[in-house]
Length: 197
Ligand SMILES: [Zn+2]
Image (cartoon, rainbow, N blue to C red; front, top):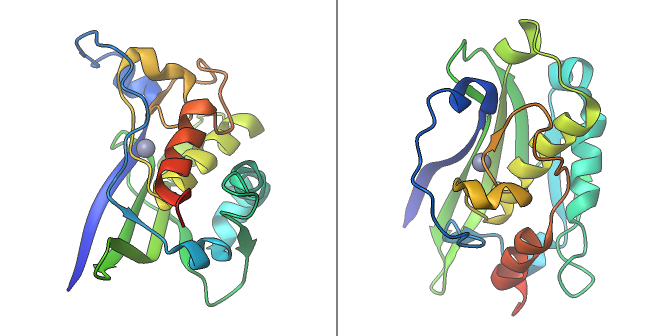
C-alpha cells in the first residue's frame, strides 16, 4: 500500500500571531507524525536544495540545520548528505503568495509490515516571504530548515504556548523563541522514533 500525506507546515509567526487563539494547556512534549525512515536509511539521507534557495534563502542554513540533527541516536542516526541528484529529500522554492506558510514538509511512505516507512520527503519554502521585504537572519533560516528536517525525520508540530522552547514549536515571530537547533524534547522525540533501530 502506498499513501501520501501533507503534514507539518511551519507557518510564518508574524501573520499568525494576531489570529492565534489557543487555550492554555500543559506542555505535551514531542509529538510523532506516525511515519519514519528505516534505521539504515536514516544513516544516509540525501538532500537536494534548488538553486533559488541556495542563493536567496541560503543553502548553508540547510547545511547547518542538517548538522544540528546528526548522530543524536546511538551516535550514528541520522546523517545527512547534500547531493546534486538522486536525493531522498527534495528542498525547493515555490510561489505560494501571502498564504501564511513560510515552509512546509510532506513525505511519501508505505506500510512495510511494521511501520509506515518514508521513501521520499519534500520541503518547500515560499518565495513570497523571501522577496517581499521580510528579513530573516541566518539563525532564523537555520531554525526553519532544522524544523522542516524535524518533520522529515517524523516529528510533528507543537503548537501550545508552553512548547516555545522546542524546535518543533510551529510558530515563530522573528527570533522570539531563540531556538535554532533541536532541544531536549525534540531529541527525545527523535530517540523515541529511532532509538530501537
Ligand atoms: Zn512544522
